[in-house]
Amino acid sequence: MNSAGSTVAGANAAAHEASLALRIAQRAFAPLLECDMRLTTFRFAQMRSAARRVLSALSADDRGRLARWLALLCAAAAMDAREVAELRLARIDAALAASVAAAQAAWGERLVAPQGAVAA
Image 1 (cartoon, rainbow, N blue to C red):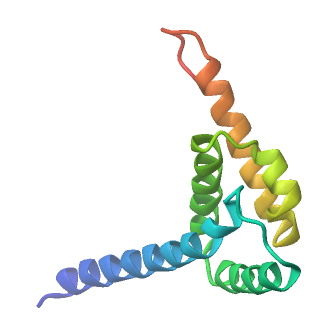
Image 2 (cartoon, one colour):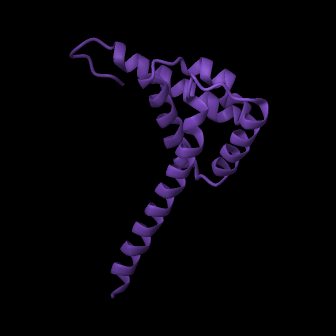
């Protein structure tokens, strides 16, 4: 294989690894957002520890993707991201909680934009 082929293969493998880390983070954070789930203090501490561990392994790009995914998950479940951020996400990572609230606010502006208007 020539050097160009190995470079493409290496980039493809790196993208796959990044998406794997993101998927692992999504699996760690999803149970934290279930509204009907009442967590004991010990169980929440276990989940928070796992979420922090996978969050520390994410790149900056994957953190942004995770924040957008969490905001989308909150919007799809008709949850207020600010409430979720204050109650659960802020206890894990304050910067992530702020990113989720900002992403949901930005999407709210786009959804409210009139038909024919171009969202910035």
